[in-house]
Each structure stands twice: as C-alpha cells, then as structure tokens.
Length: 229
Length: 383
Ligand SMILES: Nc1ncnc2c1ncn2[C@@H]1O[C@H](COP(=O)(O)OP(=O)(O)OP(=O)(O)O)[C@@H](O)[C@H]1O
Ligand SMILES: [Mg+2]
Picture 1 (spheres, chains in turn yellow, cyan):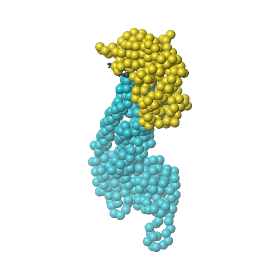
Picture 2 (tube, rainbow over the protein chains, first blue to last red; picture 1 turned 90 degrees about the vertical axis):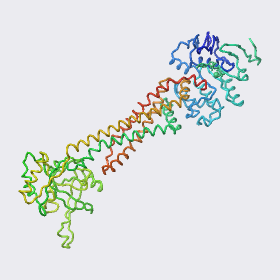
Picture 3 (cartoon, chains in turn yellow, red; picture 1 turned 30 degrees about the horizontal axis):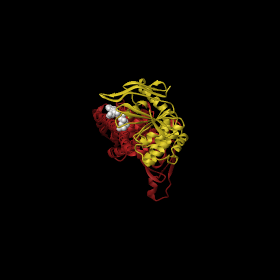
Picture 4 (cartoon, chains in turn purple, blue; picture 1 turned 90 degrees about the horizontal axis):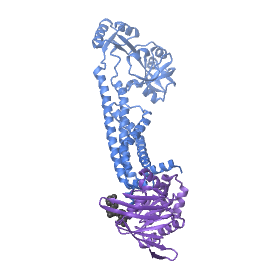
C-alpha cells in the first residue's frame, strides 16, 4: 500500500477546476517534487494532502484512511500527527523565539521538550540563534526554523510549498541539503517548487497544468540523469 | 517542560513582546476596574461620611448652663420635665484639658450608656467603656499616639489653681485601658472619652457639666414643647432645639447610592464594549498567526484557551492596577467632597480582580470565538 494515494481528485471552485481528476501515488520514503505554472493547482493539491482542505470529488488515502471523508477536527489531529508543513513565506509566530516556535509544534503534538527542540535547531544549524525572535533572523534562517519545526514531531510526510521561493542561492542550498538528509532518514517529501534545480534533485517530478497532471519524470539518482516515462 | 509552563510562556511572551497593542487593552481594563473599585468604595463609605455630616442625628436637644456652670443634678432636673416615654436618652458632657505624652488633649467625661443613645451614628471599633478605668479614644488620638484597642493610656492632669499660685506643678496621673476607638468623621475623633466618675477621680473634684445632649422622640413639636417647659421651670439650665436629620435628607443618601450604582453599571458596560473592540482588533491582527497555529495542529479548543488566557491575564493585571488606582480615586473624591479620608477595604482587592477577570473574559468571548473561523489553508497560500 502506498503511503499516499489520490484517486480521481477534483477541486472545483464554481466553474474553475483547480484540480481536475488527479491520480497520484506516493510511496513511503519517496521524494516527489511538484512543478507547474502559476494557478495550475499546486497549492490546492498541497492543501488537500496537508488536511487543510477537502476535495470536491475523489478519494485521498493517507495511510489507508480517506481523509476526504474526515471531520475538520479529525483532520487537525491527522495533520498534527502525520504531517510537517513548510511554507513559502517563513511563517513563524513573531513574538516567540526560534526555540519557542519549534516547541509550539511539540506543544500541540504532545509535550514541549526544550532539549529536543534545541537538537532540532542544531540539525538546521541554528543552535546559537535559539533565543532570537524571527525579526532578528535572516530569511534563510527563518525558513530553517520552519524546517526544524516541521521535523520535530517525526512526521510521516513533510509538505513544502515553495520552500526556497524567497531564498537566495546559498540559503536554497542549505534547505535542499536538509531535504537530502531527511530523505536519507526515510522521510517522505513532497516539495512544490518553481525552481528546476530544486525540482531535479528529487526522485520524481510531477508537472501540473490546469489542474491536471501533465508530465511525470523519474530522476535516476545513480546516474544523475532524468529519464522520461 | 510541561504543557502548562509552555502555555504561560506563550501568554507572557505575547503580552510582553506585543506591548503596545496590549497596553491599550490593559489601559481600558484598568480604567474600568479603577472606576469600579473607586465607586464601590464610595458607595460603602458615603453612609459613613453622611453620618458625620448629619452629626446631630440622635440628639435633638441640648442643655447648657444658664449662668456659668451646671451640675449633674441641674441636668437631671431638666431631664425630669420630659415624659419617660418620650425620652430616648441623654448624655452629660464635662470637658477637661489633660496631657498625654506632654501633648495637650481634651478628655470628655460622659455617661457612656447615655452617649450611645444620643450618638447612634458613632462608629466604635471595639467596645464603649463600661467599667471604671476604661476609656474610648477618638480615631485621630489613636493615630497620633499609635494606640489600639487594649493598649494602656497614661493621662496627666494639672490642677488649675496651683498653676496660678506659681507653685511647683504636681500632676495628677492615672492609667486607663482603651476599650474602643471612635470614628465619626468629625471633631469627636480628637477626644478621649471616659465616665464622669473616672474624670472626677482623675481631677479630684466633682466638676461641672459643659453640655448635655438629649434625644427626645415625638417629632419637632414635642421637642419644642419640652424646650419651653424646661426653660420656664428650671432656671439653672438653658435648653435648645438641635436640628435633626429629616426623612427627606436621609433619602438623599439612598438616592446617592443608587446613582453610584447606576454609574458603576454604565462604566462596566463601556469597559466591556472597549475590551470587546480591542480583542476584535487583536484577533483580526493575528489571523495569520491563528492560521499558522492551526496549520501546525492546534485544535480550536487550544486557540480559544490561549486567547482566553491572554485576556484573563490582562484582566488580572488590570484588576490589580484598578484596585490601587481605585483606592486613590476614592480617597481623592472623599477628601474633596466630604473632607474626610476613607477606609481601605482589603476585601475589595480580590473582588475587583475577580470582577475584572470575569468582565474581560466575558467581553472577549465573541471575538475569540471568531478566531476559530480562521482557515489555515490561507496561511499556506501566503495570504
Ligand atoms: N478559495 C478559492 N476560491 C476560488 N478559486 C480558487 C481558490 N483557491 C484557489 N483558487 C484558484 O484555483 C487555481 C489554482 O490555485 P493554486 O493556488 O492551487 O495555484 P498554484 O499552482 O499554487 O499557483 P502558484 O504557483 O501561483 O502558487 C487558481 O486559478 C486559483 O485562482
Ligand atoms: Mg501556490
């Protein structure tokens, strides 16, 4: 059984089909990147996978559970327990320090643990910035705090919607390196990106166009070549 | 770290690091609490103040000497003209200058039982003197000599005759036990009260009376009738009518209290509106943060708890501030309007704080509920 399976998923806003009959399978431990022009439905798909929105039609199986049929309350629980989110803007609570922002995810999940939160910050190379407020951190550093927060509860899937969209090259590299580490540890990754360089390091690339899957490519890690199916 | 500790850490961080916004909310709560506790203090203190203003409530006739002095027997003779059924009580007074710790002070010798009847509005902390050797002191006396109920008071009296002859002063001194401290809001607070017998023993002379307060029932006509009777038949004393509080004057007090109550209710309502408005703005301003919290897994109940926690913390701080400022406010009003200080009521502090927390929480309810409507998907989209 796949970790995630979308079956004939559509999201319809009035006349507009933001997602149109999408079928997609993601295996445990896979690293998938999603590309496509603006308005093609990438964020819509991420919202549905991230349990923040429900499809108009179709099934979304996460660990065998159809999240399209769950109540809002259950979706919050599933999101909390299984999903780590990283956004394009570095969404941090602005009056909490880096450490407290990471602990926030622990707080809603189970128990705040300062030591563990510090370790997570250490992993993203920000141990010495733990007591800084978001306003005292650079954009790249803020995004790394978000990564630390997304990882802290050992989620089954990490969803990142344009995580490097607002970063310079150096910071982009740091974040991509973090994804590599996560992938090596077996975390499932779905990354939306406009940046081909970021997309191509993934195992698989999915291209959306007008709410439909237009193309899928598999990246052969061993040869480093991109093979078209 | 426990969940509770993190909860408080977040609330404190939110209040401290978002100071400017929170100060506005805090200010409105503190002003509300100030006026609330101030007005309630005045509400309870006004009757006491009014008692002092209407000091002759009780006695409605006084007897003074027709010539130079009059004795207890003369007073009794005058009182004898009043029908037993119309006589509520009477209190003879003899004033003498004495010294306590070398400071001059006036001691009033009286009949405590009678004084109790002619001055029912006196506020006595402790007991009226009952036995020989017991005294009651005015609140000002107690304050300036740091006296309290149960402490011992040494009173010295210098017989007048000897001073005139230029002989060495030989003071007559006696110790008394303080059984009560009297508060009236007036000059009574400057005196020491003891029985006429104790005063006679201290001064070693029977002495004469300065005044005798009488309380007569039966209305203004009855008082007038007895005054005339005494003046025509007893030539050692002169009787006079003293104006007593009328019924309409007493209702002023009730009306004043009703007014204070009304103002309190209006202020409470205004505070609630102000807090609700501020909290609505706070929630609107923090929609993104709410969405983010939800996106990382916060259930609605947690969001409500966190915002409620913040608003209750503001209520607590506002309540503490309001208790202090309210006392100052009431004190200011009291000294200006009644030229007398009010009493600090410790019970009012927890009451003000609790009311402040409850009012803040109640008025935050609606805005906070709207916080749960925030859609976390909007945050992910970066709106
Ligand atoms: N709440 C909504 N109501 C109506 N239409 C919506 C809503 N949310 C998204 N859409 C529409 O759905 C389409 C897909 O939007 P989506 O945000 O998924 O695009 P995207 O691929 O993430 O684009 P971008 O790269 O610009 O972020 C767009 O045409 C958008 O206007
Ligand atoms: Mg998008």
